[in-house]
Amino acid sequence: MKNLQEIMGGLVFAAVVLQGCTSFMLKGPDEPSVANGRISLAIEGVPQEHYSDGTFLKSGINTDTNSFILKIYSTSGEKVYDGAYGERPQQITVTPGGYEVALYSRRFSPPALDAPVFGEEHTIVVAENEQARVSFLCRQVNAGIRLTFADDFRQNFPGSGVFVLQGEKRLEYNYTQTKYAYVSTDPFTIVYSRD
Image (cartoon, rainbow, N blue to C red; front, side, top):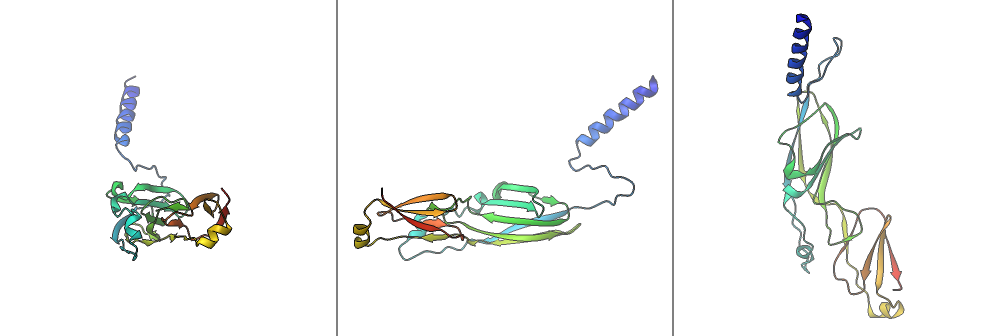
């Protein structure tokens, strides 16, 4: 009975010790030990471009890089981190391998009004016991279009305006609209609306 109590006490102690280890992994005698690597991140800048009509200032781009969206996924699709840049872990430790690292000023579902997106993507390889450094110089990754309609066009096509179509989504763009419609680099269509 005493041996059973000693064994149970040893198992409880081992369970308590192992609970405190966040990266504990059992390995067989023939399995090599793999040391992790690290990813370090830096934002070099977000260019400020202003157009002559002041539209960039009206677009409301958030240049607080702490609120940018950071995505880190392994090349096999396993999520490492997907959230605010300012809330990322201080140290990002990963197993050796390939990773897709992306940083964007906002989540974007085109087309949308007043939605410029700044960002950059990198594919990196993290080696064992090494630190992979990623620097972002965020540039605009979508396109803004601003439509104006001549009086004769509006007379020939009466109604409220047009639709900007991209993918499965459509954006109503009235004849009186002065904002930019932002689209991705994929093809888009502009369709007349009779409403």
